[in-house]
Length: 152
Picture: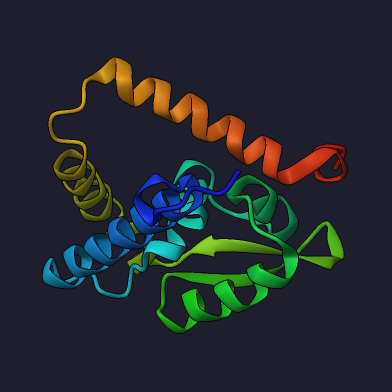
């Protein structure tokens, strides 16, 4: 049942929390001189910082992004000189995504900024409560995907 007031509506609260955290993170990146790193890039960057040179399809899966979203996102990341797309030597139909020197150079500072921003927005919230929140959000994501996406 939909709540009567916005502040009691779970969807509203999720949306507002996401928008507020994204805006704060964007400001922090800009103020730190790494404005080319956008909050929307983090899923891809975190995946590439863990394992560079992934196939585009695998990278999208790991970052939790649809193929149609990946194309535009990678275009912007390439424009911002963070990644490059190269032909897969083992599969002519596939591309691999690699970090540029700039994409590698911003890792430590970007991670530091994310950690600082998360510490600020979770101030006064205990570790156990944050762990519970992560668990609940993972369940929400899984439920929102539905059985057809889980099968992929």
